[in-house]
Length: 208
Image (cartoon, rainbow, N blue to C red; front, side):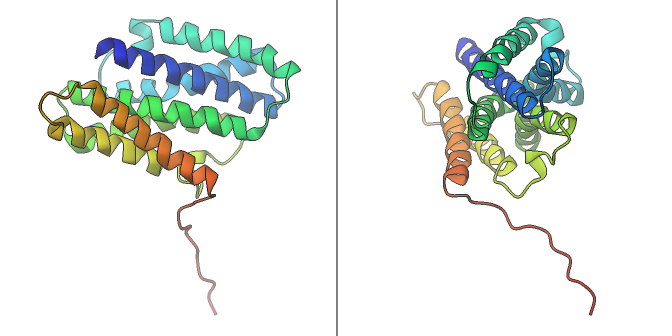
C-alpha cells in the first residue's frame, strides 16, 4: 500500500508542478517565478494539511517531493517555450493532480486515526490549496472559488475513500479503495470539463 500511495504522490507532484509552470507561462513569469509556482502548487496543499494535523511537514521530513517539483518546474519551463500549450492542458494537469492528491490527504488523515469528516476535509485541502495559492499568486480568481466543479470533485473522491475504508468487501486489496476514489475524482472533474458543468452561483437581487 505504501508503494502504491508513493506512485500516486509522484503523479500528483509532477502534474501539479506542471500546472504551476503552465500558469506561470500564461502570466509570462521568469524561470524563478515558474519554479516557485511549480513548487507551491505541488506541495502547498500537503503543507497546509500537515500544519493543521500538527504533524511533521512531509517535504521537510523527505525532500524528494520538493526536488521532483523543482525539477519538473525547470524542465517544463523550457518545454513550454518551444511548444504551443493550450489552456486546456492546464486543466488536464490540474485534474490529474487533484485525483492523485485527494487520496493522499484523505488516507494520511485516516491512518492518523482521525474521523471520517476530518479525513474528508484533509483530502480536499491537500488537493486544492496548492492550486488555490498558485491562482492567488497569478492574480486570478482561484479555481476553488469559481463556479466550476472542482472542490466538489475532490469532495466526492475523499468521501468515496472514507466510505470504502470501512465498507470494502473482505478479500479485496486495500489499493482498490484508493484507486476507486481517484477515479471518482477524475471522472467528476473530467465530466465537468467535457460538458461544461458548473455549480449554481451566488446572486444578490437588487433592491427595487
